[in-house]
Image (cartoon, protein in one colour):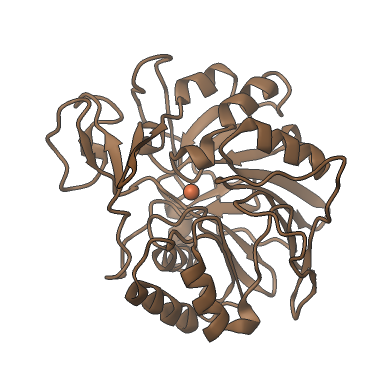
Length: 368
Ligand SMILES: [Fe+2]
């Protein structure tokens, strides 16, 4: 896919939600959001909330990036939790944009860390939600409440599909975890416009989303434990939206979750290449990178960032993923959140110079 094709795929749909009850989606074609994949001079990626906060994590200038850590502040400490949130600040010339990607699990941690990092989430130019799990959307309803009338006019949340707003479950040996449901109608009621970006879509003129991610590898499968709660057949959560094999379900039935609406966030940093942020990576980190390359026609990957969801993966999947990393040859790999120690150790062993260890409060500065 070349840049012209990216333009052709720039169309998005806006969601209309009934407030209360199951989301019902009336998609309509909207104007193309983007021209070609945009390029930025600089990207400052701040890991606002992650699973760990490591005061001893090493920072400093590497070959082509700078890693800044947030030292311990006893009066205003950072809080880590099982969740992920990013603040993304980019520059192109004098033009500055701020995008919030994912919103951790609890507003306690998200608000605390934004305050501690001296970043203002209400100054955002756009919002992106990667998928509908609570450890990514958890604090978004509270943020929308606080931001009502205070966010920039027309503030927009980019989601990858209807399923972002369906109820999710995870079946574990220890029991069922109810991931809840992000209420799109309630967000719109607070003045946050919701856009379904199923195709690659430019966000705030600087970033772009991957669109729904083609599954091209044979070793990356959706987590077997993940379930989606089916809604009525004519609803946004009907199984017709979950994938080609799920067509007949009864409301309330738990169906296998293939994360059809999960998308990645991507920047093209001038002179460096793509920075691909997978968030939780249920669609597969390699699939996500390949999708970003295909959508832009840009092969050079500068960094792969995010949760890669390989914590429960068997050794052979980890080995195949690391082999694919070597083929892609990114300059840096930043394995956060749900990546798992098995994969971090494998990257450390096989590609030690590429590894940047994650920690809540870390700023990575890409570009000039
Ligand atoms: Fe996650």
